[in-house]
Length: 94
Image 1: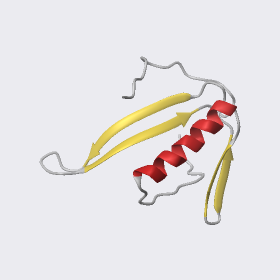
Image 2: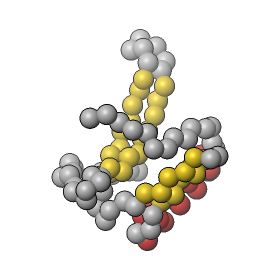
Image 3: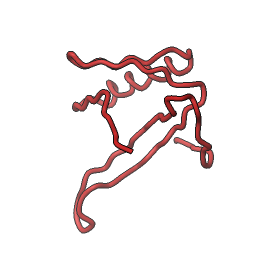
């Protein structure tokens, strides 16, 4: 299935700035409100359902014998038709 990017923003931020964005998203999720993303002239508003799939990935990209790029990705997924997927084990973040 092809992927269509509806919105993308990438910039260097301080950990404190990133934490502020994540707190804003967390507050919207807790309140059941839509999440609006805006950067320049681009914007999108999405309404996650009550039980989206939450995916967390830690990755290393680059050569196996040298330094690469590390990332932590947080992703919410749901079907546009409202269907859901079953999840795996319990996530713990410490």
